[in-house]
Length: 442
Image (cartoon, rainbow, N blue to C red):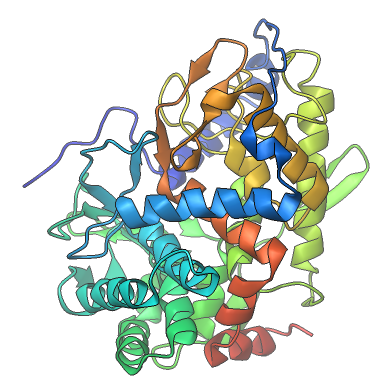
């Protein structure tokens, strides 16, 4: 069966590419987009989660997130839905391989924390990995971005995605180290070894963002700092069909200074680029020839908080140092890429919980305060699977759905803040450590 994407259903990558072209044409667009009137928002009565200490509060978020990855995945293929209704009643049939990568990691967290029977979690992990290796359509080991949750067939005419395959592989390798089950070890290793990383370079020095049967390789490349670090490290550390360690030097690392804070970033990309690689790779206390990337994400998060509270606070009355956070998400007008600094996209006063939720290890107290305030002041923003994808306190709009990768980054980063479990488990993979050593981390 073929599916036609909703009109707004562009990938994050496509939206970033379009936005990049727009900014090149009109550098004044960012400030113009901020000329929107403001309203008022008021706190509400305390509710249940506010009575918990921070550890129990984060545990409640993780349990709710795990419920998404358990309920909104196929029991026969293990593929996780790209999105679902926040109340759990859902008939979507489109999976994203990135959501499945987060879902595989969620199975490990749930097993470690005893959220469900270990045998059931092991069985789901085996089912998922077996399907990925033996039944899921692929090309040179790379998977399509969006697939039918039941058949695994490509939907939306999506691309073989280099970055989404990398996110999936991070989940695969986390399972390999956590469950220590021989079947899982063998399946995960074969999935990794099957990927032909040089093929996705297409003769260039940086990775193409993807490939389609009709048009071949996409012209857009992973050539500027972003969530790409996991992609390059997985490819450099690969057991076979790897790329040269010198590839690490090929992507640019532009810097931005915002109110005396200077850090490496992509000025047309939102906050999630500073989160995703850090969900699995442990960059704490390490640096290469260019940066300590964990500290860099700390500064990027500080900058984003300051941007919301100071630059946007005078225009949107809901933004403050206690309520902030915008990253690629749903909106009243469909899926959008927005954030800053500098201003990106049609900012309208919306709050995206995964902005703070995915940054918890970088600014723990500040990010947890934001999440507590959302749950306290706007209880409709917290439902069966935890926080909805986005809401707008000024207009009264609440998104009706959650997105798997946004639920996932909050779950993994909450656990990393609490115990470092995902970091510790993933970094047991010898390929990850070999790659970091090869590119000069010390």
